[in-house]
Every structure is written in structure tokens, then in C-alpha cells.
Length: 171
Figure 1 (cartoon, rainbow, N blue to C red):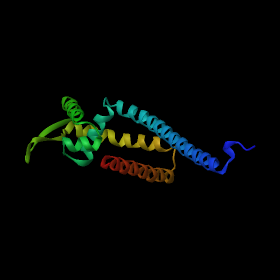
Figure 2 (figure 1 turned 135 degrees about the vertical axis):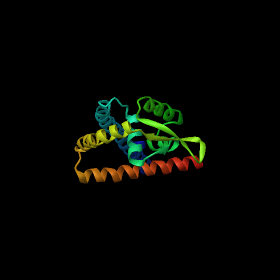
Figure 3 (figure 1 turned 90 degrees about the vertical axis):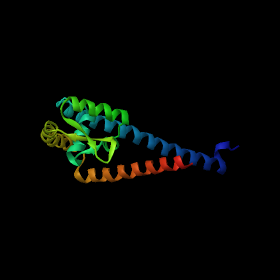
């Protein structure tokens, strides 16, 4: 007598289910490895930033202003991915430290620019090259070719996730 799982109909279901399980298992494993890698790299780079008595987000604000010049607070917010309330708080802290100042926007009285002060410029000009070396060192676990491949794959993954999010919002 044949068991129910040996019929062609049940084998195809079992095969499809096994394939689906393997795909799901691989996706879950990728997520765990990606998260653990990100956490390990972030921890190392956050240590580097903390040496300068800055939080990672404060450093990100200084870095974006250094490389992009004065920006509206909303632009800074979008570039470093914090909430609108968060950007206000963070810029307030950097103002208190004398590293950033706010300037009026001539076109919109409600808007304010974040601008590096001379002290902020001096700090980021001194600290950023050291931080770039720390990034290079932490990424040295991959060859240059592997880094380029990882960039391409992670960009592809991010774009696919963003497209899926847009699709879900349309539905």
C-alpha cells in the first residue's frame, strides 16, 4: 500500500513546500547575517565617534554639513534619516556645543538652515579623515572586489524592498 505522501500530487506539494521552506530559511539567514554584520560594524565605528564626545547622529549631521554645506533642517533630517523632532533636538545639542548654528532662510521665514560654525568645521575637518580610515579598516574583512560586489547586491536588495513598499502602499 502506498502512503499518501508518495502520490505524485502530494510529492509536488511537498517539493514546492520544501522549496518554499528553503527559500524562507535562506531569507531568514540572510537577515540575521546582515543584522549581525551591521551591528558589529556599527559598534566599532560608534566607538571611533564616541572618542570625540559625539553620538553617531551628531557626527552624521556634522559630516553631511561638512560635505554638502548649509542645509535646511528638513534636508538634514532626510539625509540622516531621523524624525523632525529628532533633528530639532540634535541640532539644539550641536548648537549648545558650539558646533552648529541656525540661520534664517530668506525665502521661507518658517525654515532654518543648519550651518557649521568655525569650531564645527575644525572638528569635522580633523575627525573625518580618521573616521574614514576606521571605516576602511573595518571593511577590510572584504577585498575591494568583494566590497564592490556587496555594494551592488545591497543596493539591489534595498531598491527591491523600496519598490515592494511602494507597491504595498498603492494597494
